[in-house]
Image (cartoon, rainbow, N blue to C red):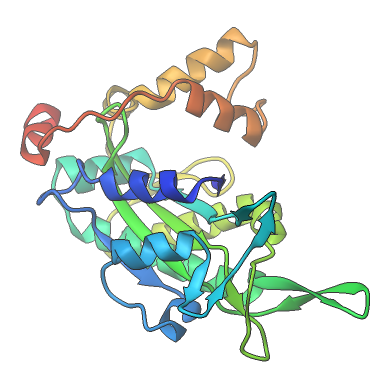
Length: 277
């Protein structure tokens, strides 16, 4: 999914607080992208730097955005979320095969690297005209989660692409995100193909579904359904509208996902695993 972030303060608080799913109470995170490296950002996401960048403060002397009605206006960025198939989440989080978490992260990072290489761009106004310039660099804060809001095992990563990129002259500019939306399905397919490769390399057999979907072979449909409370809630809402997942648009599914979203509940990882097993 691709979601636009509209409020820097809310986004900063959301990602900072969203740590209930981890083993030690801290959110596993990492800086990604050539733009992040250019800014000297690496390793765990530093909350202070993350908050500053969400507000458009690229460096001490440069802030992206515009002044409107006495207030500074800047879109913080976009959240690209990649979610593993339910069987991968069950084997990683319930059965405890942590290699699958590494496989997920490798697939996410390869997909983002391709997005950075081919989709990163900015718009530059010159002589009254606007041109699109490919930049091939992004600043990404990646946060890994292990559960859904319904407290099901759900391995996924929120990848916050900050609204900034460096042009060919070395100037920091706002990102042009149109291609991220246009190629949303293709990015998802790339992630799943990369993950399927990693999973089979680990020795698992897979069963292929529609398009690029797959599941690890050997898990019963009943087992997967038992760990899919969020999906069931979304499908129930779609059914009330007379639609299935296949018939609904991405926008409809995203709206219903937000409408049915539960409040977060802080439960220790050990208790969750015990309950799942």
